[in-house]
Amino acid sequence: MQDGQLFTWGALGTMAGASLLVYFVVQYTKSLVDRWVPWLPTDVFAVLVAWAVLTLAQIASGSGVGDWRLYALAFANAFLVAAAAGQINNKAINPPGGKQ
Image (tube, rainbow, N blue to C red; front, side, top):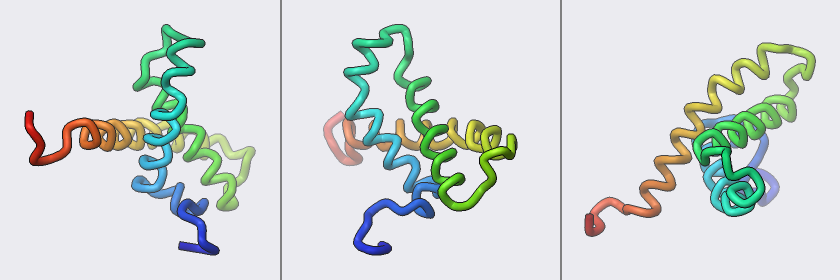
């Protein structure tokens, strides 16, 4: 933990940090998105949030804003981060060892 912060730009660039933040953002904003953009599935919304988190983390870490590879790689990784955030949600709803 750096300077008493739970999230740092470096931590958000990792699978664990990005997945956790995406999980929280989607959980807190899902009802608003469902109301304003009802045609947007939650999993697609999670990929968009993950892409934004990964892109901002890379830019904050010093990557060039004009480099197209930054956006392409963040988009590819966004699917992995969104899937991991979905698994966090599944474990929160159905914890291991809980009644099925």
